[in-house]
Amino acid sequence: MVRSAWPLKARVGDDGETEENGSSTGTSQPDFLCVGAQKGGTSWLYRQLALHPDFWMPPIKEIHYFDKLSRNKRLSAPRCRDERDVCFMESLKSLSNRPSIDLESYGRLFMHKGSLLSGDISPGYSILSDEIIQRAVSYFPNLKVIFLARDPVERAWSQLSMGVRLGRISRFDVTDIDEVIRNLRSPGVSSRSYPSKIVGRWRRHVHPDLFRLYFFDDLERSPAELRRSIIHFLGADPNKPSEGLRADHNSSAGKEKLRLTDTVRSHVAQFFKDELRACAGELGGPAREWPARYGFSLLWFFIELADDIDLLVWCDWLV
Image 1 (tube, one colour):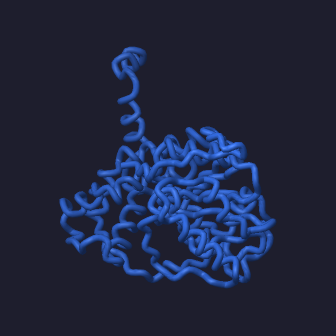
Image 2 (cartoon, rainbow, N blue to C red):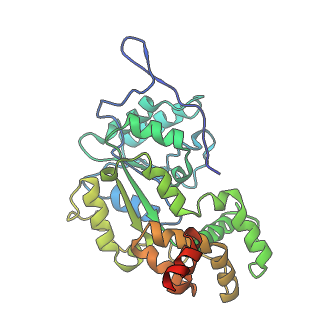
Image 3 (cartoon, rainbow, N blue to C red):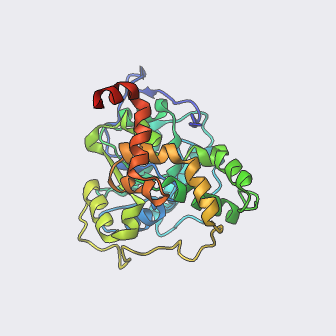
């Protein structure tokens, strides 16, 4: 289910007239959004940018302005390095009780960046409605958007593990297939588990030059190259270090995860079979390798594609 959040407030011009399609013209605005995926490397990205000299990042990783700001419970205390951080948190608090989304006020949250780059890394934005996406990118016409895609099977299991660890999901029997599938079907998990649909929805509204798709696979294989690619896309210098933080730094290492047996893994893969196929065809890159991880051969892929063509005509042509 795509969250629609609360109503959008129309922008009011200098003459008091309401501007239904107004756009931001000032410098107090985010330069980019990272819209997910949850468990796709967004915490890694926040740390890399927060310590990079070309960026000023908000003192909390996830602002959640467009999805659930008024009821957001923060998992950790905000960073408070200087007066800018304090002012940001005060401004954010004042926005939390407003009845509608005010894009102009949201943009002013980023006034503290000065000449640096800044953005909002909130994985919850991956499930925003088309209406909110369209209004946000229209108001901030130069806004860049990043999505970090992850294999749906691995991502969903990582989310379930985090949910149980944090008490958001009741502990369940991980060997009970029915229990596993029930949790996969829950709105909080299923809404974030179909990257082909998420990417398709954002691509409908964001100019191709302003949208970039990256992969968790590359974070595992070559974090330094992934860091370089993202920072370059955002317009900063990838050669500058992030205050000594290594590109392969992973604060999630060692966190408890639910045990995933081969049998359950196979059933979860079957559950996401169609999405694995869609990702391989629509996202490309490392996603092309995802089906083979679960024994879905190239032959299986083409057989599935046959559902989208007139198979009888194809067979007649062969004869």
